[in-house]
Image 1 (tube, rainbow, N blue to C red):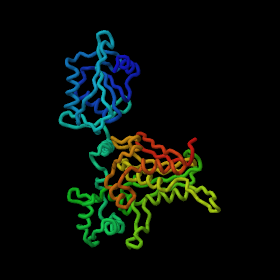
Image 2 (cartoon, one colour):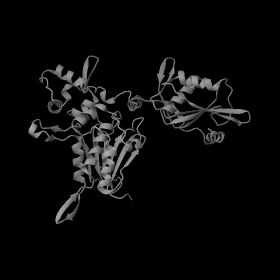
Image 3 (cartoon, one colour):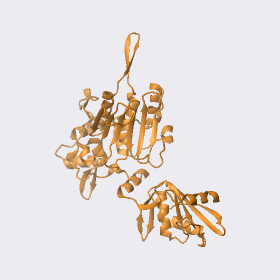
Image 4 (spheres, rainbow, N blue to C red):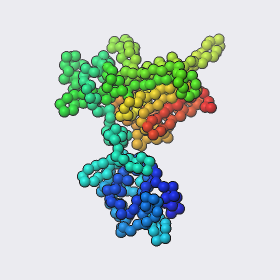
Length: 412
């Protein structure tokens, strides 16, 4: 980093990406600042600068080696920072810049007094992360799967046995225990990660509840879809339709082989598609004396976008449903949570495959909602919209949500 850039940082003051510190800072305080940057979007600590921006310079001997030791011994997982000097930033006063990126192995912890503490940057301050934030960081890194957590208070009786019977009989092709044999049922379901044993008690997992629960909303308020339709191209108090879609992800299929594809009760995917069909009109034209109706949005694209939202959303974010919103010029599907650590919009467009909730993906694949290539953005959503009306779908990642926009026609 050039001296001119460092001086510009100092003139602008501390913010979410810059921190000033004297070089006599303790090793645990420096580790705290760096951990907060690593768990946010990265940042720079300027050693040798006072809180008011005045340059006091560095005096600690072997400062680079000391910083490297802090990053190796006081941060977990250890990191290697980028160090650069601004010599004579002020006559006879040097500044050492310590830069760290947004950490690829979140969450990072400071180690002090044999205790791991997790911090995050908020503006120009640092605070300890909440339990919910920490869970999301671990999940995003792939180090834990939220879907395998037990749902407190949810037992075998909270499953829809009809849906489970169809899955075991028609999809897996295996025999089922007797209804009265709860122990065998629980063993089977634990083997599939649909239940989990904790402290001698067996509970339904988050994934099990989402897929096969009688009433997922009772235990997981964030498990549904908020569906809205507006007459205009922006939100308004007057809605054409407003509905809370709830229930398990999977529909209830007929058990009989001759009716194998017959749906008795809709799952969330079918409910969302039905809402769209009821609140959008098809365009019509005559071809050779026949009326040809064309939906505003292709069903294969809608299905893929809805399934992606349901199986890949961050279910650790409580109290927020997926939102499905129809406007006069577009349709939006918004999922709570950022993309996982290594996933970007460009990599999704290129065909990167990922699974935040692997059990959901596996079982939805068993029901052919997810294909084996797992490249729906590249193979279905983008080319499907191009063929349909020559528009490009938009993918927008914000701090705590991911949005897919499908356009009815040319963008205004």
